[in-house]
Amino acid sequence: MGYIRRNSVILLTLIGFAVCFITLSNNQDTDSRSLRMEYDEKVKDLDERLQETVKLHEARKIEIYHLQRQVAHALEEQKNISASFRDGGGVKRTLSGLGGNSVLHLPSALSYLPHINGKPESLQPAFQLSQGISRVSIVIGIPTIKRDIESYIIPTLRSLLDGLSPEEKLDCLIVVFIAELDLVYVKSQADEIKEAFPTEVESGLLEVISPPASYYPDLDNLKETFGDSKERVKWRTKQNLDFSFLMMYCQPKATYYVQLEDDIIAKPGYITTMKNFAQQQKSDDWVLLEFSSLGFIGKLFKSSDLGLVVEFFLMFHKEKPIDWLLDHILYVKVCNPEKDNKHCTRQKAQLRIRFKPSLYQHVGTHSSLKGKLQKLKDKDFGKGKLPQHSLNPPAEISTTIKPYQKYTLEKAYKGEDIFWGILPKAGSVVRFIFNPPIKIISYRFVSGNADHPGDIFTNTTVEVMPSYQQQKKEGLLETDEDNKSKHTNDGYIQIGEFKDGRIMGDMDKKLDKVQEIRLRVQSNAKAWVILSDIRIVPAKRRR
Image (tube, rainbow, N blue to C red):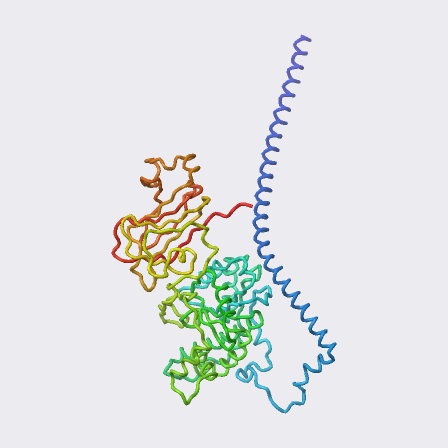
């Protein structure tokens, strides 16, 4: 009996140990899973914080650059002030011409906007999203209003920002002027812009402002002129005031001011192109440089001239549309009433200088004037490309298609001009050879242009030659029914063909590095061909 009792005790003890062990083991498993989940959450959180830090780094880099410039300018101003006092003049000389007892009344913008007298807030933005960036080379002003049918502002900003290099982002500023008085709408638009471009807003590259209601006079009792309806007179008068407010805001921020519309696309490199063109002018007498033939798109002014321009606009804001007033400024400056229109046109051309090809294209169809359709296109936009020397990777370029005059393949590849070839035949090729081979992310080939829309590649394939090492490793040159790529007899892989004169896409990641891209014409062409856009995007090198 004692033996049984002793064994029972031992058995119960063992069962107890087993239960404790299982419980402890389950607790450990639970703790392990809990720790693993906690670890995964921490890793996810750290990854999100890392991504946010990268964005902030880009924003802060631009901000630090502008702060350094402002500090340097402040030091220079302090140096000039000290020198002025050492010369014995200083403050007295600065104020000597504006004594408080002057009998004369100096005209100002207030003379043309008497309703804002005693209301300094009338010339302050009602809404402002800004980091206070200034002292850049170019500030771009974009007025926009609420459109009933379609808004173009986000695509317009995306085109402008995508066309900027990292260096250009440090030397320009984009100001969106929402010319609406409904602050709820203004803030919603600003939030949409901030959500779409958080880094650019955070860095100060992109600003958003709106005007106060007190800035505008009564626009419902305007005199109808030039056969315009009451609604159109109100629209054009408000437009004059909108443009003037935007110019006044932007004037102290940069050396040059450029005005655009809110429904355009831009060519890459537009900032450097405008800046270089302005600095290359032999004389400083010009009033504006035009980078588009349409409306108030791509009009560049010296910021130092904006005072005159704004005062003229305000002086006649009720009388005429903005484009007429701009032309009148030039007329007043150089036209002789005793000579004919041809002489006047020649004189104005020295103040209003046109750059070609156009840097901007109008893409909107619905005007800011309600009910008006505006399908205007700039014919000079497609006539050529801007220099983009750093965009395409280095390559050996050749073609069996005879070029017409100066329109060579080399210039087209550099973005300096178009390639214009004479009657390609079956078997004609255009070759881009990369030595050493490179990994390619995407490609784009566009043929034809606005002047010659029929000069396009038809029945033409795009083929690639993978690097030898990759061919050997993956066996990519072997025909495989499961492989959708088409293989040529001479070892190339066909990745696509021209449709409607163009082809674009992402490179198959399995190809790894590419030795060559080849365009091959499959049949005799009935027309000449133009390559107006060549874009090969290489993968970034790892440091």
